Length: 213
Image 1 (cartoon, rainbow, N blue to C red):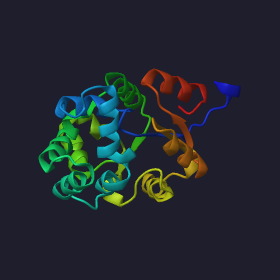
Image 2: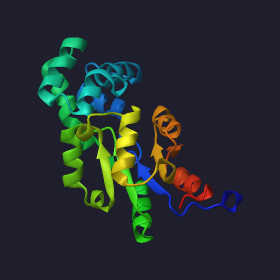
Image 3: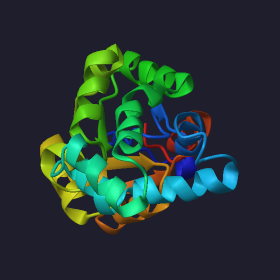
């Protein structure tokens, strides 16, 4: 371990999209809107239009202040998609989020070792409810925060502050893993330990090398 230092009080906190669950929006739109997302370039364009880097309309959906029907209307009015096309994408998101086997295996190892862990995810209510109902390993987390339930999204400082209070640990004891670097940097500014997640093998190795588990 780095410098022989360990942090026995560390608690791991996982993002969900591209960390615990597979999330490939370009691929999703090419499947759902083949006449519009015809190739990599047009798919990337429509990902930007629909998801807005998870700000704008989709950010409101993640924050829990807009329902799917209104979101579809907003997306259609803003992008030129039909309401039916927008709703097709919105409704497909829960099925598109499939568990990443290597990440679930790591969670199993942590659980077997008695290591507590949590989640902190930007997630709209219909998707959060589906994940909780569908995947038994969601019950392995000691606790978690969905953006839709607290009215804040990463990288807003408030969501990290809410999470730290809810988890019952000071920021310096929390180790946050997210694929999106701005979310990692936001956590660090608030005193959390944090790393950018690329895959489970890399993240587990970094966590162990730092002595965080």
